[in-house]
Amino acid sequence: MPRFLKSTEALTFAVEAAVATITLNRPERHNALSELLIDELHGALLEADARSDVNVILLQGAGKSFCAGYDLTGVYAGMADGGEDAATYRSTNATIDDDCWGMELTQRKLSIIPQLHKPVVAKIHGNCLAGGTDLALSSDIVLAAEDCRIGFPAARANGTPPSNYWMYHCGPQWTKRLLFTGDTILGRDAARIGLVMDCYPRDSLDSEALRLARRIALVDAELVSAHKRVVNLAMELAGATTLQRLATELDARAHLSRGPRRTRFREDMAGPGLRTALKNRDDAFGESTVTVNWAAVGSK
Image 1 (cartoon, rainbow, N blue to C red):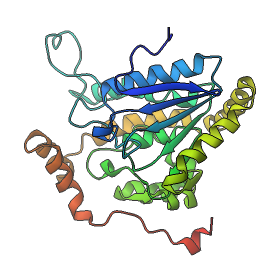
Image 2: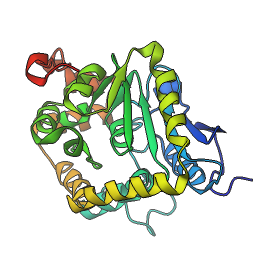
Image 3: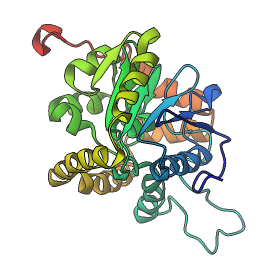
Image 4: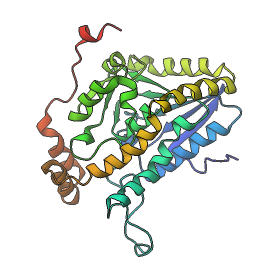
């Protein structure tokens, strides 16, 4: 019996040749992060880390996308408000502290990836947006399809990433360029600026990611763990762990914005719904894919 993985309604879990493959499995929702998926993913990651027949974890998404972000049609990254326990338990958004508290509950589950002893290879295709980048960029190695779209469009009206490893991958200027606008970047360009480690044509991404995962799995788990943890300790010395807590608090502060875009988004979500909210948020930006000056960045 699995020790940590109690259900697999929203993902699949398989182990072969010392590789644990975790597949987000809500393809009809582009693997948007629901409360159930977040809980199951947390359990699956702990399960893989605990098993002696696993040396490396491969994280991927079923269907057309890796992960399109948090499921905004459900409870946004946390616990429901109201109900019969409303008088007993705090709301997740009544105050800035409530907002921080609610997001921290979710981030404790998603931010476990750097703390795992086993390395995590994220394989991204299709859309890797908003909360999807929280997963991918906290992984140890990120491989991307050349034509996948990576970005945080929610930065235009919703908040700032509550889990923020962007700068540790591509530096302050590219991080600002992408978050200031909420624009997306294609996988091939993300590899050029260091946001992901490498990119491949979509039809060879699966085989390349599995090949790397199996190569890593040839090394004893204790040795791979030592390599991972020493590098992550270096990132901690550069403030990575502290930054995650501060990023969540700054996201809560950003939620207090009464600017026109933030206000319109809230009104649209309360009225016409998600489709209208996203249209009104993004239409003014037009084409939102970053064009990278390859000559300046250098050839791959």
